[in-house]
Amino acid sequence: MIKEACIECFQEAVTAEKRGADRIELCENLGVGGTTSSFGTLKLCREKLNIPVFAMIRPRGGNFVYSGNELEIMEADIKICKKLGIPGIVLGILTPDNKINVEQTRNLVELARPMQVTFHKAFDQAPDYLEALEDVISTGAERILTSGTKKTATAGIDILNHIIDHARGRIKIIAAGKITSENLEILSQQIRTNEFHGKKIV
Image (tube, rainbow, N blue to C red):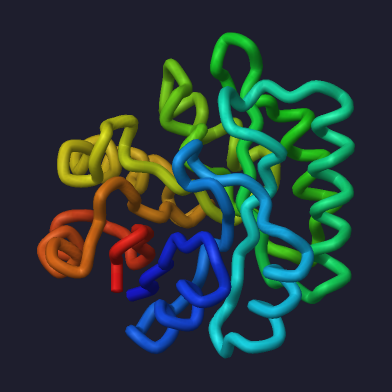
């Protein structure tokens, strides 16, 4: 089982690693759902941690429809992560009607190579989660972070398993949504994935 801890500063990352996290999702401003961390934070986490760090690529809070300038910012941040040797990034881009923006996402996925890419919980805003699943797969991303369109993984168990079944191993599904060290064991028995994500997962 992979426990991915969502954290927003270097010290939290160090603590999460000590407590048994297998991977870090590194971001700032979790109050707005997470934005890209500073260069210094990314660099220090990459140098000091012994577990993989996946960096959030998000220029601001709010929706997931981005302007040309915002996409340029995301591209620049991806290039910085690649230069630092960060193994993975986390992003999500939607169209104005909340469908997956396949073209823009694919462009960033290709720019990010050889880094791995997770499409984050913007996925849960899509009106048709199975269509969204196929769209994300078509971008070349390796993972989708989702709570099964619900507020919590517990509420989304059935949809999460539906998504996992339809994925048929073509993409990894990370279960998220109020997953903690207290409910992880039971959720890991109910959700057919081996990757779990949370702020308090360790």
